[in-house]
Image (tube, rainbow, N blue to C red; front, side, top):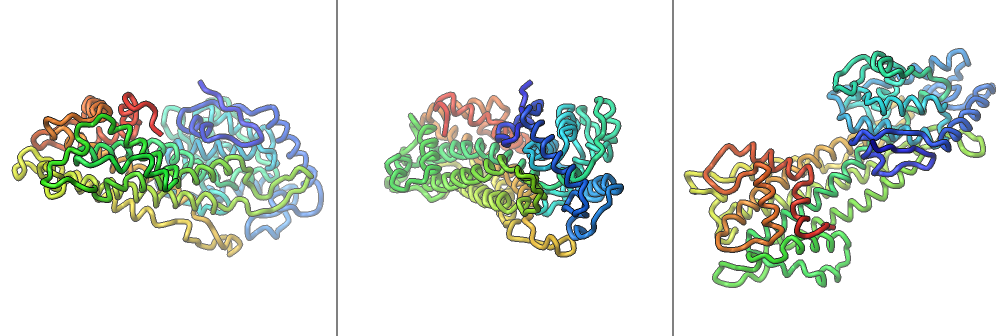
Amino acid sequence: MHTVVVGTSGVTASDVLAVARAGARIELSEEAVAALAAAREIVDALAAKPDPVYGVSTGFGALATRHISPDLRARLQRNIVRSHAAGMGPRVEREVVRALMFLRLKTVCSGHTGVRPEVARTMADVLNAGITPVVHEYGSLGCSGDLAPLSHCALTLMGEGDAEGPDGTVRPAGELLAEHGIAPVELREKEGLALLNGTDGMLGMLVMALADLGTLYKSADITAALTMEALLGTDKVLAPELHAIRPHPGQAASAANMAAVLKGSGLIGHHQDDAPRVQDAYSVRCAPQVAGAGRDTMAHAGLVAERELAAAVDNPVVLPDGRVESNGNFHGAPVAYVLDFLAVAVADLGSIAERRTDRLLDKNRSHGLPPFLADDAGVDSGLMIAQYTQAALVSELKRLAVPASADSIPSSAMQEDHVSMGWSAARKLRTAVDNLTRVIAVELYAATRAIQLREGLAPAPASRAVIEAVRAAGVEGPGPDRYLAPDLAAAEAFVRDGRLVAAAETVTGPLR
């Protein structure tokens, strides 16, 4: 099994994916253990002094003015975890919780939090044992970290609350720790606070969304090319010299992908109209511009994620010169903005894909295809309602594109009076990515059927490879009406797990 070593300088996106999705094991580097011990010495020294230090010998948030005596500090740290574990609603997905815990461990290992090495080791042990704390949908405002979600994770480290075992059964966390020989942690000064303050949930979801969108944007280029082919469109608009004079890198990459898929097509430019078609509709002609803008948005979001993956997000933080300083680095605005930005791009990509699908089904605009791609139009409805489903998904994508980060709601008696709502931005982006997968699947279903209805014209070799693979995956081709939901589900799975991209790349080579 792959092992991820956590040091003091952050982690990579591939590390997050390996731990969250592939169950990679975690080890702490010697450097990280030394940094943890050194920072803890500073915290212990400050705890022994009479002067109040936020998070070490004071209360939290609006209660930070109270100095806490040494005999109450362990209780203080336990209490912050218990009281902040106040999430509600459905459980959050296992991969999100694993990413959340792993990224908190990343910051802990930076040596800027003052947490003891044994706490970090316990975090790694819990992840390695496949124990997943129960975290709920609602509870984070995305400002002083993802407080409620992280608190539920910290509660498991204390042997309290509920968690899911490696077998998928939810049980008391204490029982699961005992079964795996893991001793619950007894939190000391600052440790409870340090386990809760971070953008880890929203960052983990950003990293996973970027990974999924990397596949989906290639998938969208492929389905756009298939639709262009099915509509007997012109690929002249994909010429690299046209994209060179508007030098957006994402646009050039999408155009190159479409051109690669269409290479050798016998349908492209084979107009059946009385007059040659000068240009295609925007949804076909401008596919590289729209998908390319989304790709460039992803590049910006990836840069933000890379910076955040290298960050130590906590409050207060331990500095190399021995100071322990309060700060605002836990505010989620940088991550929240790009999560919302991606949701806008996802909505637009889904919207243009739906317009292409509708064009394939409309006999007045499809250049010779049967109405709704039906076998016997009137007796058969063809893909009429598949497009309704796609339209409903796109309408939902537009609602999900409304930014969460433009909102703020004050909390903690106005101490935390401006928040990022980054967790909410991340949650709606996950839904948007899921729905985009379905939208692309419907276009794939329609375009492959339409190409097969163009009898006597040979599709591109890459298109042929996609059609053969999707049919082998259980998505049926042209014919009389049948129960469509299973076909659509199979098409969705074909897109989601990357088989669409893999099928095209057997001919094109790696797409960009």
